[in-house]
Amino acid sequence: MPTTLLSDAASELGLYSIWDSSRDTKLLCLQRFIRLFAYGASTLILVLYLSSLGISKARIGLFMTLTLLGDVVVSFCLTLFADGLGRRRILILGAALMSASGVVFAVSGNYWVLVAASIFGVISPSGNEIGPFRAIEESTLAQLTRPNIRSDIFAWYTLIGTAGTAFGTIVCGWLVQGLQARHGWTNTRAYRVIFGLYALLGMLKLAFSLMLSDRCEPEPQKQERHGAVELGAVEAAGLLSDDDEADEPPKPTKSTATAAPPQRKKSIWPQISPVSRAILLKLCLLFAVDSMASGLVPASWVTYFFTDKFALPEGNLGTLFFVTNIISAASNLVASSIAKRIGLIKAMVFTHLPSAIFLALIPLPSVVWLAMTFLILRSCSQSMDQAPRQAFLAAVVLPNERTAVMGVVNVIKTLSQSAGPVATGYLAGIHKFWIVFMLAGAMKASYDLGMLKMFLGHQTREDRRTEGT
Image (cartoon, rainbow, N blue to C red; front, side, top):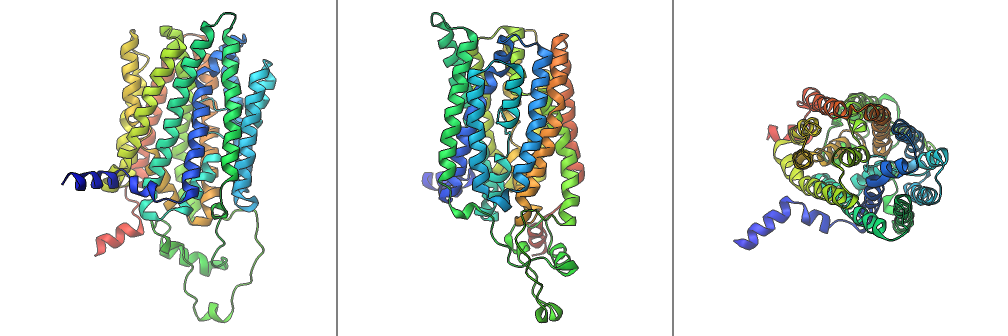
C-alpha cells in the first residue's frame, strides 16, 4: 500500500514524465534553471545598483521601460525567424548576448551604455523571462513531448525556472551583504560582482545550448498547405486538439490524389492559419492586461519597496524572495494536478485570482511582517497558471506555428510590461508607491475573469470525444 501511494503521488506530480523525458528536454530545463538563477540574482540588486550610481527613480523607471521596449524588437525578430534559421543557433546567440550584457554591467557606470547593453543584451528588470529563449524552448518542448504528458513537462519546466530564481536571489543577497561587510568594499563594487557572475552563467548556458541535438529543430511538414482544401481540413479537425492527430494532413480526395500540390521551397517566414490568428488575438488582448499589471510591480521594484519602506538588508531581502520563489515553484506541481481534474482554463483562473488580491494588499500594512505575509501568500498561487497556460497555448495552434505564435505572445506581453516601470518610477518618486500595487492587483483580477468569460466553453477535440463515449 505505501508503495502504491508513493507511485500514485509520483504520477500525479509528473515525476515519471520528467524522468522518462528525452535528453534534450532535460537540457532545456537545465538551461532555464541557469538563466533564471542569473535573472534572480541580478533583479534583486538592479534598482539598488542603478540608485548607487546616482540615477534618479524616474530615470530608473525609464531604464526598465526602454529595456523592455528594446527586448520587444530583438525577441520578435529572433523568434519570428527561429524555425527558419535554426532554433539552436538562436539559443546560442541569445546566450552570447546575455553574457556580453553581464560584462558591460560589471565594468560600466554610464547610464546610456547600460541602457544599450540591457536592450541588445539580455537583462531582466522583473526576474522573469526576457529575450527569445522562452518561446523557442516552449515550442521545442511541445514538439519533444506527447500531448498527454505535456502539462507535466511544462509544470516541471516552470518549477525548475522558478527554483532557479529562488536560489539566485538568496545567493545574491547574502553574497552582496558579505562583500559589503569587507573593508573597503562599496555597495557599487559588491553589486558589480553579481553582474560578473551573470556573465559567467551566460557562458555556461551557451555551452549547454551547444549540446542540444537535431531533434530540437522544427520537424518538416508532412504536407504543404495547398489552398482552401488544406485549411478547411485543419479547421474541421479542430485546432484545439490535445493530441497530434489534429496535426496530420487530411486524406487525399480524388482531386488531390490526381494532382499533388506543388512543393514549395522552405521559407524562414512563419505561416499562421486564420483560425489560429483569431484565437491568438483574444489571448494577446488578455495577456496584455496581465503583463501590464506585472510591469507595474516587477520584482526589482518590489525589492526596492521593501528596502525603502522597511530598510531590509540585502541578505534578509534575498531570503524573503527565496522563500516566495520556492513556494511558487512547488505550487506549479499542484497546478498540473488541478488542471488534469478541472481543465486548463479553470486551473488558470482559480489559482491565479487569489494572488491578485494579495498583491493589492501588500502596501497597506505599516509593519514589515504583515507586508511579508501578503507577499508570501501571493507567491502560493502567483505562478500556478503558467503550466496550464503554456499547455493550452501549445494545444490551440498547429505544431509548425508554435514558435512564431509563442514569440508573438511573448512580444505582446513584454510590450505591455514596458509601460509599467516608468509609471512605477514616477509614483515611487512622489511617495505614492501604494497605488501601483492596488492597480496591478485590480488589472490581474480583470485578466482572470476575462479568461473565464472568453475560454471557459472552449473544449478540445479530446474532451468532446470523451463526452461522446
